[in-house]
Length: 257
Ligand code: ADP
Picture 1 (spheres, helix red, strand yellow):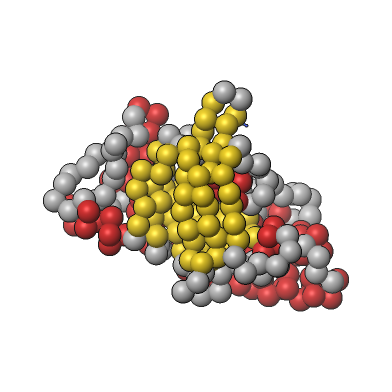
Picture 2: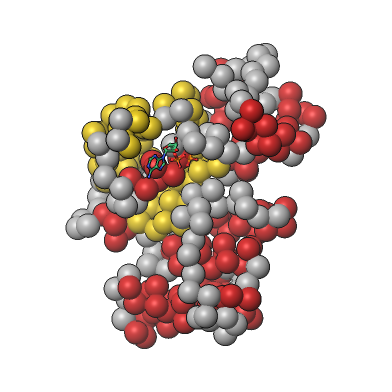
């Protein structure tokens, strides 16, 4: 399988504060990668740099096989997507498609296909202001993929959703895996276990572990490793533990450095 993206020695400073510290990883075409780390670890900062929204302080982000501006080949669902609440889902998606450079006719066709894909066909003509959180997240996904990107970046795509919404979103993401390379962030290990070829564990701006789920599990076999999410992350730790079965908890791989 060929490589889509190579990140080398990536660094980002906010003023004097170095929040991303010399990070390198690769994304292989057609794979799903989970970027896992507690709040504040730097997940949004990394995704924003990959999406071309933020300039790295140092390091390189190199796309292979993408001709022209790589941003055209990227779809991005931010952690808190913004919507014009007075627009209908259909109007919003057509607008997003036109902004991505699609013709009026294609934008209309693609928006219908996308609404069908994310399960919002019946809500196509409803105003977004009336949507639930899960519906908005699905609409955000439709917007992120309407131009058929090669790389899909999703920032905490399921963390704000209830259990039914999480399942919906994970299933949609899984069904996209055949068509595009996916990198998504989460602070909940159990979410990552559901869809991942590669895990990247981020802690305080550093990549502390990377590899396949199997590799990481094998490495930490027989070791009970405790999440070091500290006080602010107690809630996340609780979620990690409570959503796993007893058997899964026995295999849990959570990193402390
Ligand atoms: P995560 O997505 O993992 O929660 P972020 O990438 O949002 O982490 O943040 C990483 C670190 O960078 C945090 O310490 C955060 O406070 C800091 N940070 C994020 N955005 C800014 C900004 N615009 N200015 C200064 N510091 C920031």
